[in-house]
Image (cartoon, rainbow, N blue to C red):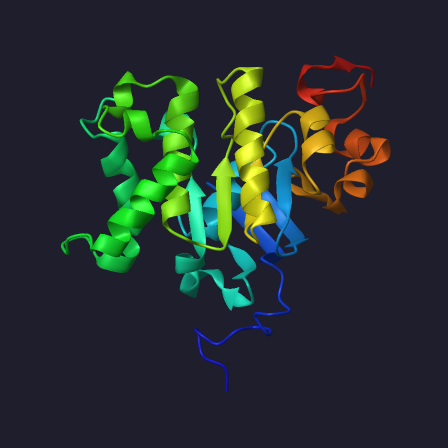
Length: 261
């Protein structure tokens, strides 16, 4: 007999994230409707779609920040509710209080709280993990700086470091490139690709189709329902993009392109 903590499938064979017939609504209005998606382990995956498609809602449902009406979410074969230690989540920038008096180092230390508890002090091992995570995103010279003093790109690096310090196999990032310049975005993408190459699964809400086609290897195309999910070349075909966005001309971000239909 299965229990809540039993794997739905063998973790060695299960996808990193699987969503089955997921429906989420706000005040009786569906924002996700009967969504199915499967993202294999070890992918750099994008979640794309027009504004209001439910991209951010999907990530919040995975980590338990948004209730669901119906459906099932599994992470590495386990129910998401019992697999939160397998997920590191980076929220949108506007969901963070940048005026809160906390340093870069203290933010990244928060990534260790799941293993140490909120009261216990960090062990030497935890401090090493925190220091290494800060170093990997290039923020060691700023580790004692208040987060409110940082640039947009630096702030994103700090929250990626916090996610990295959790040592979770699945990373979810909600629009991590919002408000950063092209050079910073490219550098952050290099970081995320490196995490993928180490065996992690990195799932990113993103808007720019050209970037997704060039840098990602898997994509979930949403517009309240699943339009397509699979390798980028297949899921982001011109036909599927027309189904999701209605009809646009030109490459790049359909939200900023010229509407033709």
